[in-house]
Amino acid sequence: MFQLNATPSRTSLINNTEMLFFSGYAYLGMNHQPQFITNVQKGIELYGTVFPSSRISNTQLKIYAETENILTELTQTADTVLMQSGFTAGKASVESIAEGSCFFHAPFCHPAIRTNHNSVLQFTDWANETIDSINNNHYNLPPIILSDSLNQLTAEVYDFSFLNTIEKHVICIIDDSHGMGLLGNNGEGISSRLPRKENIEYIITYSLSKAMNIQAGAISCSDKSRADKIRSSTWYAATTPPSPSMLYAFCQSQDIYRQQRIMLDRNKKLLQDLFANRKDIHFHKELPVFIFPEENDEAFFAKQGIIISSFAYPDPKGKKINRAVINALHTDADLQKLVDAMNAF
Image 1 (cartoon, rainbow, N blue to C red):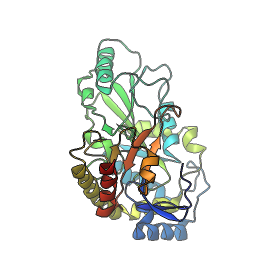
Image 2: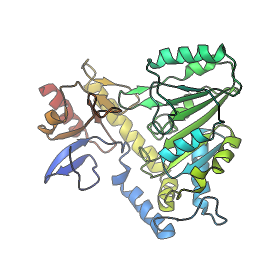
Image 3: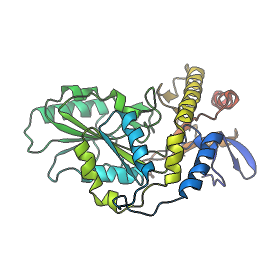
Image 4: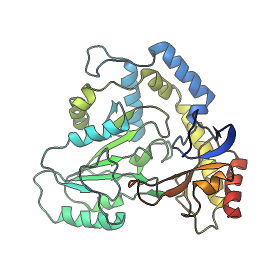
């Protein structure tokens, strides 16, 4: 384990030695984007660092509604509810479901939205089984489908086209924490590729911290009445809202996000081309994540002056997953050094 004394960028200082950093989830590198930092500082001047008031108070900062409007437009949904974190967003989403509903858990559901054990099937097999169960059985309440939008640990983006074949009214809760700001032409996440059908209600829950670098969560709802119900929950009313200074930076930095996505896409495609002939390295064309063989662990890369992501999840006692996570700040030379390290092995 590496102990860091400062937020890493493309590199990190470890025991006074600079090492390349290919870990974490700061995909767009916003922490080290000068104009974004300036926007945060301006936000602090306007709002301070925290607004310790309930979201149901009779005194509200307009920046919350402005942020929600941006996210609603981005996801092309009916309404968005800002939450304190991605975890509280997930919990509030699940709590809004009527008691007695039947839940169908995908193979990978974040604990924020999980209500029971995840499926042990492969995603396609689980999807086919879910289609059969829902279409061939009677439910007093709409069935609930729960899934993450992607699995960043295995570099897999899930295909939700199977929803086209579901005939009954269903509610889909999708955790898009690692897709928001990353997937889609405009960083809209998984929302742009979800089937839009009258019988499907979507509750898209996500953290804004991964790509956007904002300590906050949100829930984008295809049904405005669902957003209204969430706003009446204790998860919404009883938690301190996100920092308004950070939300100000979010609203003012939309062009910067677009610029950083272009840089990340360039880095991602370059490294994919460099690893194209390596059958032992797994990646998805839309994700900045590269899965290495078990023997290429953190100790191996550390000898090359490189820090990768290496830990077991969700079982901390399980097998470690070795990954390189690239960001928008990495240079061509950084990526080449990573490739050279793998080739040296």
